[in-house]
Image (spheres, rainbow, N blue to C red):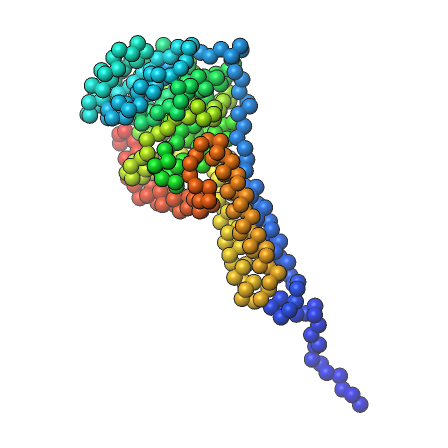
Length: 400
């Protein structure tokens, strides 16, 4: 009599992936997760979503209003010597004036301005040395606005230089009915370094895109146009005068809440800001974290930026780990999905960012887009830690 064996007989369907089986639950789930992450990383990419500029109207008949350009100077004698002529030489028939507000003069800034005294549309004013208990920067902007003769104000800094003689004209082209504020673009020159240029670009692109969708949150740069009447009716910077920095961001956050915001992103409307020193770069990043705490309505931006970077890191990490897993257990079916999850989002993000960078004339290397995006996470963490360790009284004009 033949006895039956109780030992189960292995079949092809029972074999593990490493023993020759083509499919099992772990393999299917791994491949599915990789596919989902690859798609999510591409779709969540900030640059995948195009910038819209069609929401604003031009004045009837193409007419543009006279403009008052306000340039804030803080010991910027050298910068004014190099840049002021570009402001005064703007090609703008409707008329404009340039008001230089000197916040601090310990380097002969006033002497430099004397060399331009022959310009009929240049005016100068000073922040009183006795001013206390408020941001001198915001006070400088306020004094400039009050001194302006025109309804439309175009605000920038002495470290900035218009990219073309048509800067004012391009920005003013958005000053249509129902528009109270126009956001422009600014960035560093190529010599500032690839990461600084890309980091600044990605932040400003996000701000401009939100504004173009009617959800303006902050400025991001130093190229902002707004109505004088709106500023005066809203009591200027009232509510945040004690915070030393963030004048552009506070203006957008306070006055764009009701809508009426347009975006001007054409290359001729850009301004180029001087490359920051190491200390300036550090201070700007730390001060921005203090400013961001005081802004309202930032949830959509933070959610979008968080999803963008999280999906990128999750996809890259999953691709690397799954590739290692497939090699170790000889589950070769997973490997193509791992490579696809690594390569496809990389190519998609490079293409999307490259398209946006070409539009804005950003010279940062395209092949470094993904490495730069991965680096931004650590960059943000570094300055978040620096902010947490800082003395919070350093961000306000006085202790209270």
